[in-house]
Image 1 (cartoon, rainbow, N blue to C red):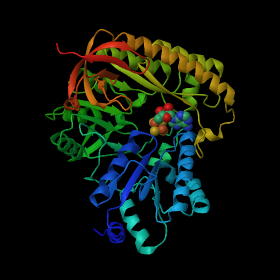
Image 2 (image 1 turned 30 degrees about the vertical axis):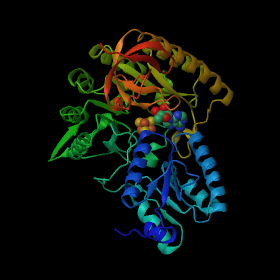
Image 3 (image 1 turned 135 degrees about the vertical axis):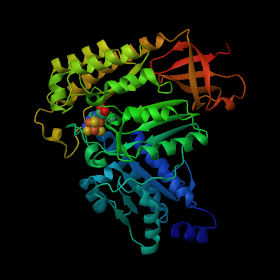
Image 4 (image 1 turned 90 degrees about the vertical axis):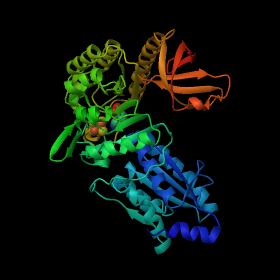
Length: 459
Ligand code: 5AD
Ligand code: SF4
């Protein structure tokens, strides 16, 4: 393995180069960043949190909504100032935005000082591109239009010792009309199930107790293995058998592919968290049709009922888009009605954001910004009221909480998640770092809209 960048850097500076990765967007991107950091650590780069003092700064971008685009260009502006003061500062950009031609054109014409540009399908090449940058003394751009074969056994530098993100599939075939993901992440590709099991076994032997299985649409997982096809429930069943693993989560499900077998898995598999994130996007059949979601509100409600029959205590979250082109007040009222009837534990609400080159960009009847915001506020108020009411039902009871670490704002408070993914904060009197990564009993004493508060319950 050539390692020109690090070797030259050490020669010139007498120390190893530091690298910071700033991640925008979803857990897929977070996981890509973990892999990038793993690859760079192997070559001798040292991680630093602060991109302002790093020798190499990497921005891993998201393009799902306009806001993420704006934040990227804002951050790039900060990097430019650093580069002006320190020309040897190296900047790299990668991730979803790099799969869009208009972004590449803009970077080429207006950001000539960006050193390395790499797309989603070959982020593993970034360390080589850093070497080429030194070798060839010119900027490196490598974007592949499509994915190649899945690369296995990439290292990863994780944020938590006790929990891990595990990709089970890549890409998306659904082409919801508002969404850029099928264009930036390509077609669906499932990993070989044996490789997934091997990876999780290795993680567990290294101390991991919870895995989050990642895919844009995990319900359509189809992993080929020894001439057989494994669907998602079969994969879950096998993961559930791994000794030492305690919790399995997954993200994200598409309602159109949620099978009865998967719903039954919740009842059967003891390690599968009793939590589902099931994006509905809208409560109006007219809007769902124009979004190309391929289910009706009635189908969605049937799914929720089946899930709650199988597992009465299941917690449910969703994604909702407000102000999709053509959404009328009546359509929006149907969304409110759906939210009232499902009573989500939490809902991620988004203002519709026009994405270049998606079908919805060309829809004529875009909703006025003011109306969008007004509807958004009404939806958020309802969603939050319901979340707070649902959370208040937890008070007085004891739950198993996997402790993630100390709260960022208070060093006497530990923070973790229930099996149903509720965030729980609880105060500890003395040093309790040994509890991090353990599942402990917490008695809930107070409920807030987005979290619960409690105290350690010693029985
Ligand atoms: N505008 C607003 N929200 C969007 N999402 C995806 N594309 C858009 C868009 N163009 C939301 C969807 C999806 C979540 C990850 O992001 O709700 O489920
Ligand atoms: Fe985007 Fe729809 Fe695919 Fe989700 S299912 S990534 S919303 S196209």
